[in-house]
Amino acid sequence: MKEFIKSVMKKEKQEVIRLRRELHKRAELSCEEYKTAEFVEEYLHGLGLSTKRAFNTGVVSYLDAGKEKTVLLRADMDALPMVELHDVEYKSQTEGVMHACGHDAHMAVLLCSAKVFVENLDKLNVNILFVFQPAEETDGGAEPMLREGILDGLNVVEATGLHVMNDVPVGKIMIKPGALMSSPDDFVIKITGRGGHGSAPEKCLDPIPVAASIIDDLNAISRQVIIEGERQVVQVCMFNAGTSCNIIPDVAELRGTTRSFVDGVRLEIPKLMEAVVKNACDREGFTYEFQFNFRYPPLINDAGVAAKMKNAVDENIGDIVLTWENPVMTGEDFAYFAKEIPANFFFLGTGNEEKGITAPLHNSQFDIDEDGLIVGVGVYISYILGAF
Image 1 (cartoon, helix red, strand yellow):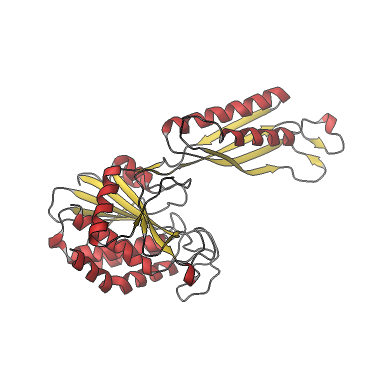
Image 2 (spheres, helix red, strand yellow):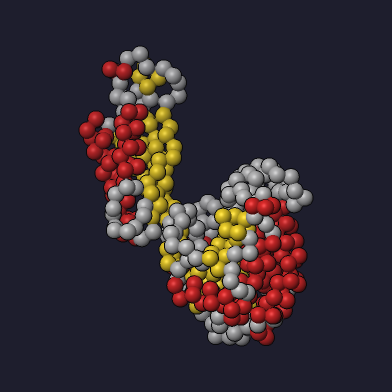
């Protein structure tokens, strides 16, 4: 098996790079991934696979190996509203849109893996459901695709996906059982007072000072111990008030994000937040509106699936798996798949200081060391062929 995987990785390295560059040029925003979806469909059809659409621009393909169980492999598709600043031959051809989060790489790895699995159907002990999911960067495409029934009747027993990461050196992957990524919830707070001329504050009820005091009290929630040992973040990221230097506004608005890893913390945070806002407004005679939006759930990796992947990679590729203890505070809607199916989401190393490839995700200079792409293909092959 080890020699087979090694030979496949050598053979397919240029193909996965080609796919990534083609997809990079086609960068499209969330729910607008029409050309991307067409490219994915054409490639899968060329392999002899049928496809179906889900959530409009999502693409699903089922490789039937005649087995009892199915494993889901997922890649996200959307790009970001950013101008790409570095000049490369595969630069985005969509003005103001670029793959600054590596979803082009995720799709390339999955497409190339599909090619390998189709060509080696006789080696499979499971069926494979390939899921190309739109809108990860906005409201999320995973939940709508699940609602449309993409898992129905397929006996999907496990799921996996990956994310490129320049903090991880090329050639390595990072696997973490348990809590991996947080729930990226958000909030809007409107504090209403009574505006007027800036020269006569005594005639007004200025919402700006009370909003400022609320920010301090909200940030303090992050330092509270809600559940022992669990981390949380409450962060105000926007403060909007006023239209002129001599007008006291009627309304001040705060917007921000919260992050947590367990349901008990996640449900407690908005209660603590509203209590802070209510107390401050009641004390000073203001009214308020408090809106809390639950977004993606936290991403929790199944320990058994994570161990299976690590063991398969150790055996078939070698010592490339890095492990670490602390989860990250970013969010990822693969979490919806992980809530439905035992799953493992891992980070694929694409950083290389010697090549100057260090820019973080969501940066206009973001790029990857493409040598890492074939490692992702190798991990998928090792997992599917070595763990089942």
